[in-house]
Image (cartoon, rainbow over all chains, first blue to last red; front, side, top):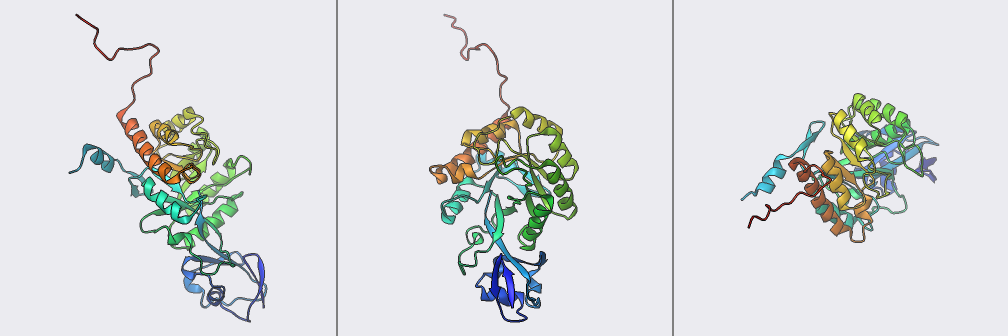
Amino acid sequence: MKLLVNGENKEFSEGISLDELIRQLGVRKETVVAEVNRQIVQNDQRPGWKLAEGDQVELIQFVGGG
Amino acid sequence: MTTILEQVKAEDTYQINGKTFISRLLVGTGKYASNELMAQCLEASGTQIVTVALRRVNLENKGEKTLLDYINPKKYTLLPNTAGCYSAEEAIRVAHLARATGISDFVKLEVLYDEKTLLPDPLATLEATKVLVKEGFTVMTYTSDDPVMAQKLEQAGAHAVMPAGSPIGSGQGVLNPNNIRIILEKLKCPVLIDAGVGSASDVAVAMELGVVAVLLNTAIAHAKDPLRMGHAMRQACEAGRLSYLAGRIPKKLYAQASTPSKDF
């Protein structure tokens, strides 16, 4: 199924969880905040959070700033 | 043995929403040539509060080091900013994301109006301040040096009001010290100078006005020698604070001899 991750179209297997998506992308899960369709998903909810076709996922982290 | 200077400095603390700090320099983590250099500069500056931003993870660089590999949140209080937000809604969304990290409920709220000047949108800033205060954030609000706006933000519950000395990254120093003086006279909450500082003397000038602290980023990160500037900023901040507490002499038009008149 297609997901829009950080603005990029990507293909993943059906019913993938948010936690698994983060793992497959090689993103360090302890430092990332996730949003699905503009809704924040807390860390402990990620393993049970099944993604659906066309979901918009944002993976955000701290960077340098003033 | 504790020197008088060390004792004076240790006793001179301030609080933001109940959290106590000693260092009066807040330092940004952007624009450094490397994260290693950034970490060294933070150390040199003696800061306890560092600003950070939130951006998308770069999916091309799997497993790369992140900012938090260089900044220990147990050592520094992280102050996530809402830089780059041009509406109250956007800024509130970023604040929510920052809090979802579980690392900090502090937010440096900035809602901008114009890309060229990076001046804040006062109405949107006020609106976002009200919402985030209500939601339990520790809100430190970036604003212009308008004394009326500063009062409105305090009334909205901001835990600190942070007027710009001059435009962000411009290095012009404190352009309107009289506005800062009026803000200090009117507000009870902590007032910090945020933005516009270019050199150590600018920090000293700001601190001598009586602000609680100064927040800067570019002045260190883009100095020819950022590490040296980190040290300089720390010393200037401490000097400015001590000078403010000590109380300067009034300015006079004519000379006054420091030596007794010659009497022989």
